[in-house]
Image (cartoon, rainbow, N blue to C red; front, side):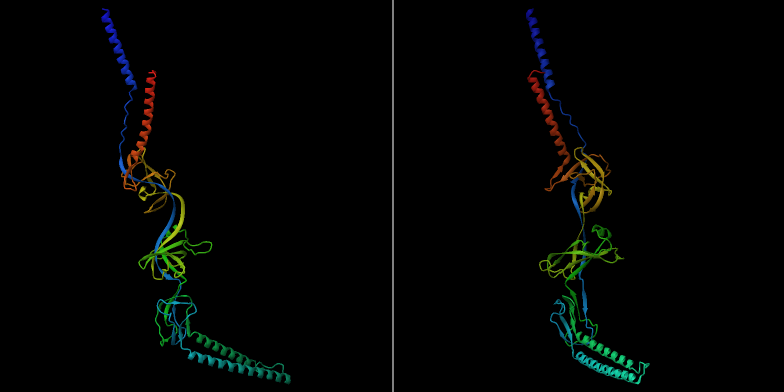
Length: 429
């Protein structure tokens, strides 16, 4: 009987130990993680918002033209006796250089005749002065005090003086005509065209050719009113020492190579073009054949050039792809941790194919601007935020954000398990 009782006691002890071991194992066993499945949402592409300064630039095109260009024409008639070898198409001329000379014989004879007329007028004046003195003395001797001007020969003396002045004027005119037999260059420049030769008879005002100055060339650049505002220029602008014009970079293909020249805006045109509603800003380049040339390549008249005009600068703006701006005043931002779309209102400063510059207290550099189109968008909708990297790979920001959260959570669970095991080994459980 006692043996049966001891067997039952042994079985009971073993059963109790089994129960205690089972309960201990159940207490130490970590609870299974409850995976919270989230709806993946619409997959969209994004780009990071950047912070940068906005430098306005305005592009335009125009034809180069000389600031000064004249028609070479004589002021008098005559046969051409000399043409400068530099007075040819493309020739370089200097200020004061004789370009064309007319025959001088006729004009030299006119000078001699005028000189003779002056001498005769001087002799007549001298005679009239002497006769006036004699007449005055006779009147004194006769005691006549109320004599007429004619008796004193005053009109005759005045006529002689006038005749002398007229003769001198004719001499000056003859000398002037003689000097005009030489047609000289009024400035340093180049010859655009020449249509004269020795022996040809030239009439006053007849075109002998065209020359232009090489000190300054200019380009009329048509721009819109908005672009004028980006340049920070008023409608009636004229450059001054206190208000210099914006810098302009010209470019054009010359001899198969792209050349660049640097000039500036000096003024705006007087009126708006009534057909195009554009206004011309006038850009100038100094010394295009010298210091202003690009490695010896001048910005010659007739070139059609592209112009990049530097405008105003606005600092510390946010910039995102233009497609991220919706409705002109809202931006779509992706929240990778929540996998949600956020819609914020922005102050759009400027938009172009290169991006949209704006201000917003809700957006910061590094935020993900959504560039993909979204139908039926609303704030908080579920999205999967993707980004195409420079190497062509696709980055999933949702997975990366969740992976970071999982790493933090798993580390905490491991620490708790370790504490439980240590407590069991010490007999606290």
